Image 1 (cartoon, rainbow, N blue to C red):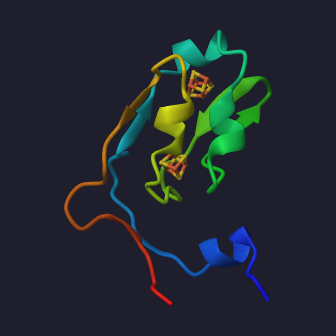
Image 2 (spheres, rainbow, N blue to C red):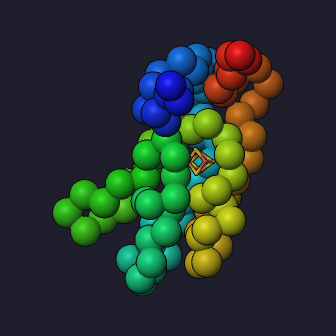
Image 3 (cartoon, protein in one colour):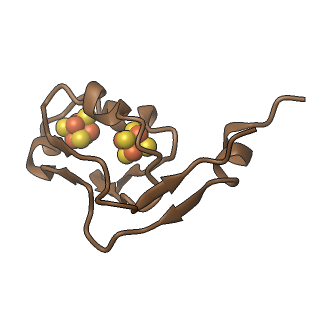
Length: 91
Ligand code: SF4
Ligand code: SF4
């Protein structure tokens, strides 16, 4: 049986940096109609709370989808520093 995305995400390990590797210009989000990041992020790092976009980098799986989807260029995207970030388990 194929595992659901939530189950797969649960197998990941993270070494979380205190500094965010992705920064969002939330001013641009106010005028953004699509808010594609919310539907597009597989790790649900973006959410809409009382009409405001919220972002948490800690669960990021470093896929780059948000940067590609954001047509306002509001995302400053970098990989985490050094050994920080997600660790994928193979198999
Ligand atoms: S797609 Fe970009 S501008 Fe729109 S809500 Fe997401 S981060 Fe903000
Ligand atoms: S890089 Fe991928 S997992 Fe990380 S915030 Fe962007 S869409 Fe979500």
